[in-house]
Length: 233
Image (tube, rainbow, N blue to C red; front, side, top):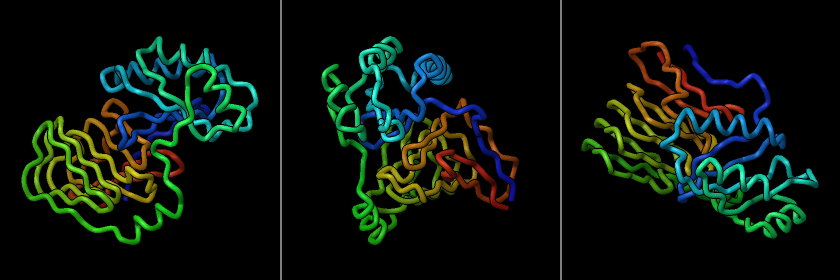
């Protein structure tokens, strides 16, 4: 088994996370305004069409012990890069109050309780697709794994609360564990996707390093908040 993964050596200021709801989660992990601006510009430049006009929810869980966050400045930074700040989540009461005073209400979007997640996993089923998935088509396996035994075209979107298995070329987008299941995986034989995501953590095509040629399957999974790609011989 060989593995290919993308790891950033320096501490990151934030992590974008995809969501089944029509918002992108921006999880701030280190509050450094100058570094955040540069990192944000770099990320958007790598995939400008993906982020253009994207509604953003700011997740404060990893910085909720910080007492002083300039939400007016943070809102301005996002707006200047054609992102649309919608609100915040997971902050301290003081942070939520400060954010609200700058037009960023407290939101709970994309957050599941451990008990809800456990119940979903206990009754997880399988959804089978045998026809090619055309561009513009979205398929969602609610509370289930998704198995596709046909090609997936560019512009198509696969979503599943559980795992995603594709036994033809995987193009388009594939989002597994969309309700927060970090143990979900994506399996495919040919990886040509525009975006892959596990529990909201994602890689775009620009960031993917394709694994070595293999006659087996490709496995995409989450490890310590990093999306990793490996071949299974």
